[in-house]
Image (cartoon, rainbow over all chains, first blue to last red; front, side, top):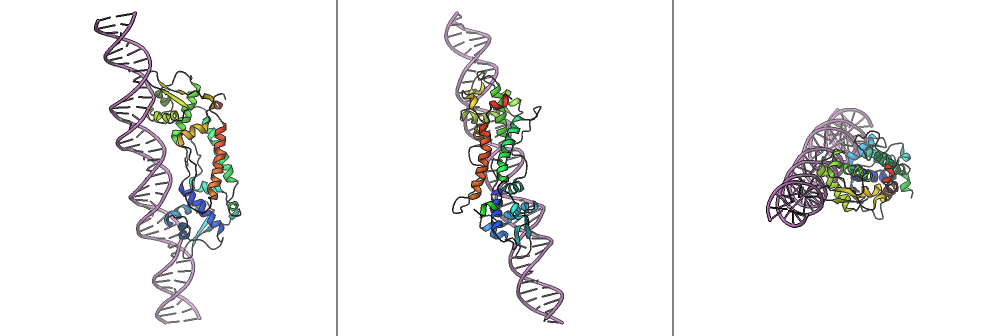
Length: 128
Length: 128
DNA sequence: GTCTACATACTCGGATAATGGTTGTCCGAGTTTGGTCGG
DNA sequence: CCGACCAAACTCGGACAACCATTATCCGAGTATGTAGAC
């Protein structure tokens, strides 16, 4: 029960992108170096963020990644869901007649956490 | 980022133990059968619960597991922590000067979830 | 009747897989930029 | 000057490989209960 390192990479990268220019893209090498990851691996993570529409990639020389237009509306939950998937944190696969009370409770708890992550946006971090 | 199956087994087992007699222990075979797990594996999970003091084991014939005296004070968080450990859900191992803002936020979110799990006790489930 | 021994029904814990997800690496392919060189 | 070509700097995506936690299984050892048999 832990968030993956990939999520950590994604969150830190997104923070860097918010602070960077919204026009000139940032190369994966620079992003990877400052986090101590290999560029190839980080790019794999970033393509997941691209597919979810929060950043866009610019290929070719002087290319890289930059925020897509939605910019300031990106919440932490968005990023986490893009990396970890949106599946529920707890799943009871037993078949006890009606719904599983335990599962219901766990999902309530998860909702509490998610609502906190949904209410803080990326921008809230930098203008602190 | 998922709870392990072991946690699911532990939670369901604890529910069964709460509903059962607090004196006569329940054998691992019976507990395992109703969940479709192998008894040997379930017993490994249960020893973790024993070590954290919420249940106790009775060996020998007519042995098994039963709640320890603390009975009604057991919260869901207790069980989860016994199985998953108490380590934080998110850990940033980078070394950026002061504390990691992202990590701080994530731990706030985790606290929200944990407080919900701490406020519901096992007994709350059965007298529903 | 009582004591001993034994079979039985359990838990306990170590050793050892099988499985699957995370975390990478490697490389070939496509794309854009800038420079160079021939006309 | 201008256009074609080429090298360089990038991203993209598939195919691996290493590693580690989860999820088990197997088995030998300890422990309590109940029963049968000897005295």
